[in-house]
Image 1 (tube, rainbow, N blue to C red):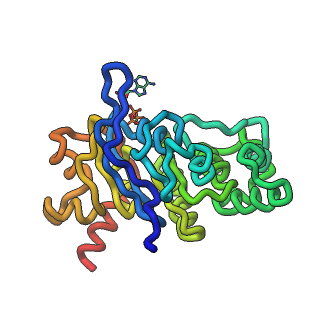
Image 2: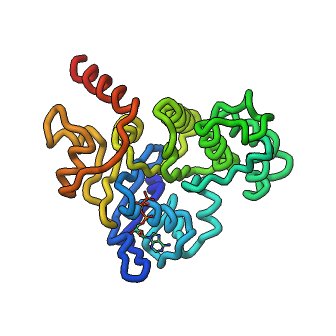
Length: 268
Ligand SMILES: Nc1ncnc2c1ncn2[C@@H]1O[C@H](COP(=O)(O)OP(=O)(O)OP(=O)(O)O)[C@@H](O)[C@H]1O
């Protein structure tokens, strides 16, 4: 029997009053891949994630997570997912370890396994050495990694991250992405991540979907999407071509690294 898709969305839509936030999204995310949902502010990315994570209601047969229908079996789906929303939840007065332990209790990690699961999660995000410092002494990048550990402590099969690098400097952004890559490597977990930093997605995601005004406008590996536009093209160019819009985002250090790596790939 073939393994079910990690996530399958079929004709997924959601409106807030007159605003059609998500408009007929079809999506299939393969087990074990890092999948990037990309688009500018207001594209509908967070709304899509909130439906997949059961935080917004859906009707049956619209979304499955590892074959489990989100509308019919919300609690079963929640156990499969670790979700890091954009709003930070770590408590600065608690240590890193205490913050993660709180999530272990919230997610009903059996008492006997809690200390070990907390240790493993902190280790996976590279915070083992800082676990007993209060979170208020952490840098922005460390806080993001702590949020990752909180989501990992229940050993989810699907890790969902909403803009995990927003507001971070380029060095911290690449350290968060490196951790995401190593977590996938170590656990085989499926990762669904939203970002509006196209250059980061290009570097770290196996496949991406470009979302604009509630719809998926292009889907494939970054290389596939860029191939049609010629050798020097970027995902920004693809986005501009399929939507007629330019994606506004900060220029950062990672972009420079990307350009260098792309050039190296072509040369070599
Ligand atoms: N709770 C809400 N009430 C009303 N409108 C909403 C609500 N949440 C989102 N919207 C609207 O739905 C549309 C999609 O928003 P959404 O947050 O899904 O986009 P996004 O791609 O995640 O953007 P961002 O990167 O800014 O988070 C936007 O027009 C937004 O204003």
